[in-house]
Amino acid sequence: MPNYLLRLAFVGTNFSGWQIQPKGRTVQGEIQRALAKIFGCDIKVIGCCRTDAGVHALDYVANFKVEKEFPEDKLLKALSGILPKDIGVYEVKRVDESFNARYSVKGKIYLYKIWNSETRNPFIYPFSWQIKKKVDEVVLERILKKCLGTHDFAGFAKLEEEKNTVLELQEIRIEFNGPLIEIRLRASHFLRYMVRRIVGTAVKISLGIYDETLIDEILEGKRKAPYTAPPEGLHLEKIYL
Image (cartoon, rainbow, N blue to C red; front, side, top):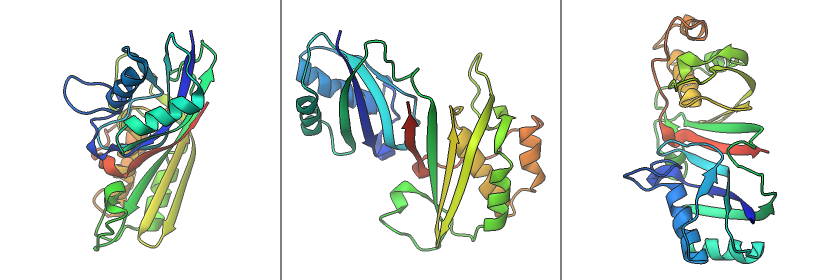
């Protein structure tokens, strides 16, 4: 049976996440509706991961199987014509029948954007967390770098049954460009809310709201992360297959 890979991007502002839910608009739902119009039948689309409401994606991978073959370029054009403007498919590729987007991911990069200014930038505002009080950049970077390496990240996650919470955070990069702060985290996989809680905790410490020892206590399993950064600053930036 033909198996097609999709690479896409979406603005998460008006979505309740990737996965279809009983109520709420979802990315998966919009893509499945578009494919149903193209092929004339219901098609199940498999996503590489869940995303929460309001989270954006610059690179998201999905796949679907269908009985009918369809030229890749024509399918890309058809999807682009049907999908809403907050979803963009930029690659359609026929892949081996065994390919499954959920189980084929080897790594991810998440990007979190902070706008550290009292004034609002309307072009960045929908895609960042605005913090008006000045962040201590040295402290922020120091706290984030403590999370680098292999740790039990249970204190930063929404726990799910039988989920292994020990993983390696392979890379953390922080860039300061005027009021724009960009934080990138790379790992083979992430736990739910992990990135937002790491960033949220680090920011609150850098603002002097919590002591620096908090990060150690969370990593040692003594405490839970007290704050989750808002979803609008989070972007799934890169998927490695």
